[in-house]
Length: 188
Image 1 (cartoon, rainbow, N blue to C red):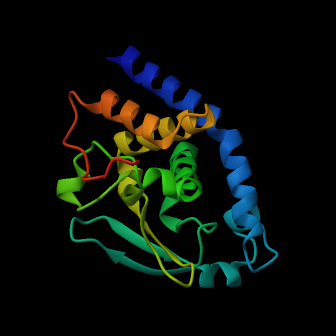
Image 2: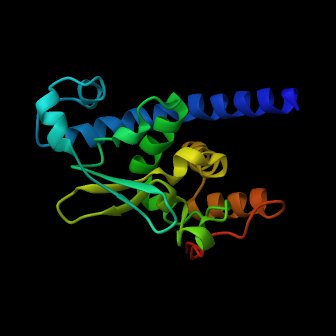
């Protein structure tokens, strides 16, 4: 059992390392779209406390008990990520960067039935409002299947695979031994 745990941690670390380049580009793009001059790393480090209080807002709970937190934009990650392993924050950054792709990728953790999720994206982001504010969902912080699916998607996208090829691969990887997939339409 111990060997399995270490192999899984190694696998996840390798996936995280492989997608870091993809996320660096996405983070630069997301940061560049902000309306203030403060960078994502400054916000994450807790600089400008007064501004940070305004960036993190409403906290609510979904019917299934998942915590949902609203921040002002995609480049402001939710405070519920504080104290969690870096790979969890990286998964949330991945979701923010690859929203349109993850909308076409199902999740196989059972969240379609238990939380009403429609795709892997819903495990991380509940909603994006017209004003750009984001309602983040903490479901992904508690679920290895959600995180692995997002990382595998990012890795395959970086390898040049189409969204449909990624979807077929994810479906094939999780078809046995996992919960029913979310009701995610097949991309064209």
